[in-house]
Every structure is written in structure tokens, then in C-alpha cells.
Length: 564
Image (cartoon, rainbow, N blue to C red; front, side, top):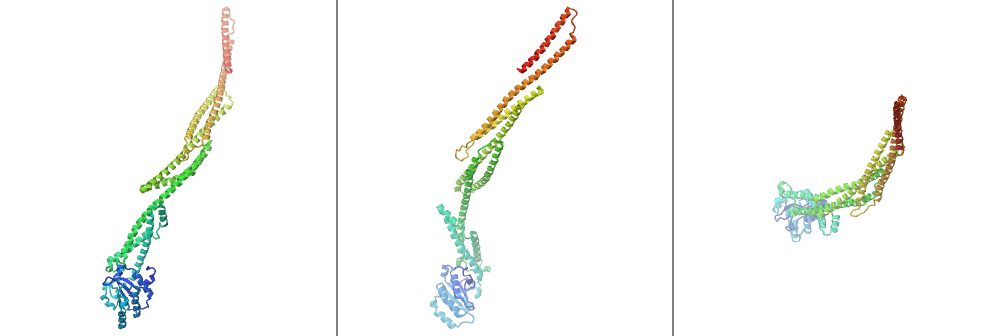
């Protein structure tokens, strides 16, 4: 029976244990009767509850019952005394009926108690309040009977409620903690998990119950040492009523079970954290080895132009962005695993290191594949850039070669010829650079790693290789055609230079012949005065003819050389 169940009855103070003792060290049970009619059922309930509090050892010493009949009638007192026979017959050693000042019929009352003494099983005496000290020490009597023992019924009742609540909660909590702790000690892991899952959270907070118990124990100990000296009521919830030892025992058991429970919670929390980490690790690994790898496998091309390569780079950046989110999870998980490794138990180290190694291997391999793909696309972009520049140079050179040359003089022809040579040299340099970029790209493709983890998976790159080699061969052919056209144009322009040279030489010869003719006409007009002078003039005339023939020959030779 709990006080909370019969609280309205207990508040009526129909009976109480003041904590006082008789000379045999038996507890004193007081029944204060009042003017109003006492409800015997409620009194019986109150007595049953009060007599359930002391220990068996304490009950064996017997009770002294004080029936305060000063405010009641004799028939009520008699009914109460008879009721004691039914409620506590073997535990009552003495019943002291406190008589009122206006005494009942002494003859009748004395005769009745004496006649029923053997049947009742305990002694009943009638005594006035001031004569109670003959049987009980004054310090063990309450102030109502002239004693010095202070008793506050409501204070006792409140403390009793706290004690019973603590006892009930602690007992229930001990059973729950024992079930949880015993479940955690089972060898079968499945039974362990099932037991812990079902009873993992106690119905009450252990910290709150422990705090309540400590406060209750502290108050009991304080009342024990201070007692009446401190003016505090001597509660029946002391050693005699097993309150303090019971609280201490419950607290010790609670601390022991709660310590084990905290360890179970710590192990469970650690296991839960480890399982969460393992789950997240597998999520990262499964995504990287699944959708992540599939994305990379699907993006194996390098494009056939700068724009195509840039589009592939943009797509690759989107793939990298998706991978970055998982790599961020990897960094967080790696930090959590490192923290657990620093503070983890020996049994978890192997599993944690295995998870960390697995996660690191997968992430590093995937990051390497992303970096390789990025470098490959960058090399392809550079290759197509060089190819485009070379194609523009060849188009420019071909444009020059397809335009008819109409130079004004030999100097302009020389300038045009020099420009052709420079462009051809630039094309040679560009083609060499294209070959280097192409070869580097081919080397990267040939060294391409496997996309699949732990497997040798060859990705078909023939299309990429054919494209690269085709671009280089096409540029080589275009360069060769341009070289052939440059050779033809060079020969033609050299001939034109020589033609201009011949024209200059012919003009010079004409000028010289004109000058010679003018000189001949002006100075070679005499016929001579004698044979000797005529002979000299004739010799001089032959020299003029020889010079003219030489000039004419030189002019004819230059013209024939150009047309040959």
C-alpha cells in the first residue's frame, strides 16, 4: 500500500507513529480520537499502512498504543481497542487509554478491560495524560501528552510521499537498468541488440532519481544527528523504520547499475556512431564506384574542335562539382574516424582503420581519374588550338599563293618572296608544335588508367587516336601542297626578277649605244687628210663597231636566259 493511494485518509491523522519509544524500545502508536465519529474503516486502513512501515525486528519488540480518548466516548474507545486485536494482535504489548478529566464509569470500564484481557492478548490500562510518564519517558511523548517530542504530521506525510516515490521509482529503475545491462552482457549479438533496442531508455531519468535520493538521504542523516536538539521533529523514517538504510542501499544499487548503464550507453553510442560512419562510408564508396564512375566512363571523348573540347570541359566541371560534394563528406568522415582512432578502444581500431583505408583508396582513385580526365581535356583543347592556328596560317599562305603576282619592280618581288618564306617557316614551326601536342595527347591516351576499381577495363580510344592522327596527317598534306605551290611561285618570281634585270640591262645597253652613236656622229666625221690618218680613223671605227656588237650580244644573252 502506498501513501499516495490513501493520502486523503492519512491527512486526517487518525493514527500516527511519532517516532517515540517505550521502555522496551518498542514503537509508540498514537490514535487520537476526536469529538466526531471516527470512521473505523479509515482507521483500519491507516493502521494497516502504519504497521507496514517498521521492520520485522522492530515489530518483534511490540508496540505501545496510546488511545487518546479525552475527546471521545467510552464506546468508541472500546471499539478501537477491540479493533486492535484484529489489526495487530500479536504486535501490541500495551494499550494506554488516556482518559478524560470527566472520567467514565470507573467500575464498568475497569471490569470490561479486566474481563477481556485474556481474549484481547494485550494489557489495557486507563491513565490520565499526566500519568503517562509512568510508562513512557517524557522525551518519547509528544507535546499533546506533556512530552518534549516534536511531531509534525504533514511534514512526516510529505517526507513519506517523497520516500515512497523514490523507493518506487528507484526500484522500477533498477529493474529496467538491470534488464538493459543484463541484455548488453549477452553473448549472442542479436539478442543483445534486440534487448538494448527494446529497453534502451528508462522510464525515468536516473540522474533525477539519484538526486532525489541524495537529498532524501541528506535530510535523514541531518535529522539523525540533529534530532530534537535542532528543533526538528524526530521522524519515524529513521533507522528504526529502515528509511535511511533502505535509501542508502537503493542509492548504492542505483549507482552501480547506472554506472553500468552509462557504459552500455557509451558502448551503444560508440557502436551507433561507428555504424553511422560505416553507413556513410558505404554511401560515398557506392556512389563513387557506381554513378560517379559511370559518369566518367561515359565521358571518354576529347572533341574534334576547340568548341567541342570546351563543351566537354564544362560537362567535366559539372561532374567534378558533384564529386566535390562527396569529397566534402569524405573529409568530414575522415576527421570523425581520426577522432575515434585517437579515443577508440582496441577492438574498434582494426575496423576503423579498415574503413578509413577503404574510403581513402576509393576517393584517391576517383580524384586521380578526375584529374587525369581534366588534364586530358586540357591537352585536347591545346591540341585543337594549335591545329586551328596552323589551319589559319595555311589558309593565309594558300590565299597568297592563289593570288596572281603583278609586281611593279624586282624589289617588290623580292619583298613578296621574303614574306612567302617567312610564312612557310611559321607553318613549319606550327606543324612541329602540332606534332608535339598530338604526340603528348596520344601518350596520355595510351597511358589511360582503368576506370573500374580492381579491374582491368580497356576503354576504346580508337576514335580519339584516329582523330588526332588524322588532324596531323591532314595538316601535313596541306603543308606539303603549300610547299609545292611555294616552290612554283618562287621559281616564277625569280624568273620575273631576272626579266626585270634583263630589261634594266637592255635599257642600259640602248643608252650606251645612243651615247656611242652621239659620240660617233659628233667626233667621227672626218675622212682623213692622208692615208695614214684615214687608216687611224678606220681602226677607230672598227672599235666602235666591236663595242656596239658586244652591247648587242649582252642584251640578247640576258633575254635568252630569262626565257630559258
